[in-house]
Amino acid sequence: MAVEDARALARAAKCFCYKRSTDRNVRARDLRWWRLAGDPHCVSDIGPRGPGGSTITASSAPPKRSDFLSFSPPTIGEEEIREVVDTLRSRWISTGPKTKRFEDEFAAFLRAPGALALNSCTAALHTALKTLGIGPGDEVITTPMTFTASVNVIEHVGARPVLVDVEPDTLNIDPRKVEAAITAHTRAILPVHYGGHPADLDPLRASARAHGLGIVEDAAHALPACYKGRPIGSEGNPVAFSFYATKNLTTGEGGMLTAEPEFLARARVISLHGMSRDAWKRYDEGGSWFYEVLVPGFKYNMTDIQAALGLWQLRKLRQFQARRRAVVSEYDRAFADEPALERPVTRPDVEHAWHLYVLRLRDDALMIGRDRFIQELADRNIGTSVHFIPIHIHPYYRDKYGYTPGSFPVAYDNYRRMLSLPLNPGLTDRDVGDVIEAVLDVVRTYRA
Ligand SMILES: Cc1ncc(COP(=O)(O)O)c(C=O)c1O
Image (cartoon, rainbow, N blue to C red; front, side, top):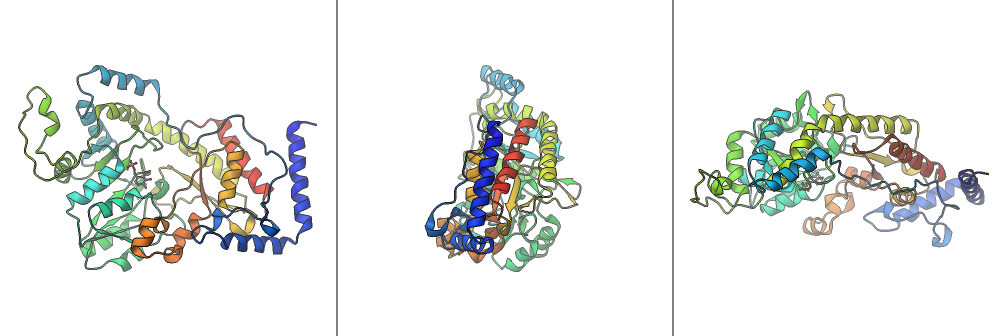
């Protein structure tokens, strides 16, 4: 008998024995209770427990690919490497001509009115809020379903982040809840295009217009994405992109702020020590040693080494996206008929950037929680991640604003049953097949 067949038989036998020895309904109910009785912040943190607290284990080693499939390695080619080397051999390694070219090409790609290259999306968000003059006494409405950077920057400018819950399908900020949260102190709305699916911008824009608010979009995941036929970043309000190592386009670390040129001119000053215009040129021929500090700014500029990567990554972006979409189609097809899995949705009026492929587990259909599911995939050599631990359960925000997990029930309920599968242009057909096989094997092994 082949080794794989023997393993499959052993697994099936183990599951069969376990199923026979307990009443299925009682066991499923108890498992849910055991999970709920654990960490009040994360029911799925509690692995599946058998009676008396013993951990349920699969009987044999699961089928496993030979090497570990990383969740999201960068896709860097020889062109990027050559461009970086060319930069290192040139006279400019910090902000210089390649950064300028990257800004121009990025703006052209998105049909944005202008672009400012910075050293992270966090820097772009922070700079945007500062440029809008948001500070102490102000409120900025945002989502709990995001990376902490989106909310930290609001704290950094001394304003109050006001969280509102997300929509259950896209996990993007819920525009009706935004409208309800607006007060006399609200200055801006900061939507995050979760996973690459654009937030519902029209009602947010209507609220912003009605109340005189700014909109600063966190598009860390949304390159390239479209909302109602218009690229995210093309409208003229401040939009922040991330080029972190896992992103659809990477410069190692890096970010871009798109906005109207007049706004960007002020943002540029704030992002580079508050020094007067074109400060980065002060060492070049024709540059001047003289500058004035207009505000106490930050040190957020992108370097030409980063821009060298970005120039080629941008040229390859359409090709990268085609591969991302092909992988998504494969995942969608493979999981379509599996009742234990909820697939990501795409609303009809958007183009998804497919930064993330987030599966949600259906509690009632499985004997194990999300954390154990992730461990089972890791045991099969498949790397995954979770996007995101909602902001309101992180100790800083929980304690400062007195949140409980139930303060934002949609975000919390989805958090505890979500996981992100590998999705990047470097995935081979074999990799995709391995992910699908591993996910379906875990589901089959632990079906409730
Ligand atoms: C939604 C979101 N916003 C902001 C950021 C921060 O991006 P950066 O690391 O470029 O500052 C991230 C990073 O992963 C993110 O996922």
